[in-house]
Length: 113
Length: 114
Image (cartoon, rainbow over all chains, first blue to last red; front, side, top):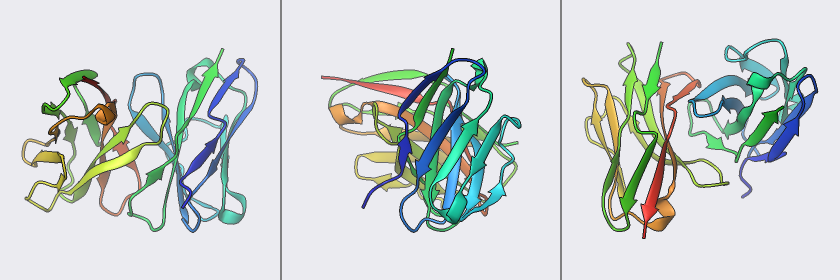
């Protein structure tokens, strides 16, 4: 069974540009989560989807971040315009039911220059 | 607010020896879960071990065990008979029951020396 996949694995962009990260959860997992780890710090929760609906987006840092999950399958996280402080590793995770074990993807390393 | 603290940014252990990674957390909740995740270099983060706060017995998974001290809000991970494949970043995490918001520590990078 395929795990959670994320694309791209690395992205280097300039300040002011736009980047879109993609996450494909494990098939059948209704719950999808985005997290971010800024350099050397803890991994922080960004938001949680249940199918295509945003259940909790309390961790989204500001309105430059837009997450979508059209059709309740894969999800995208767009950063527009990117700022230097957005650099970090963005993790996606999925779980079959709320409260179940979350399975993590390998992360996307974003570098904003 | 719930916070998770890992005070050891880096640790190293000799192959076949035992190492303990520290984790403390802060919460006013009585019902929650604690986790240790492992992220090998360039690979996915995987769950190593999980502890329910209502259980007094420490969780164990083969060579991995925890020392859960609820009153002290401490949740350390012990790796016995360390292997080269144990080298990874280890994250301690907390999740309140009936919540999907995981709180992570900053991680401890474990090096295993042959």
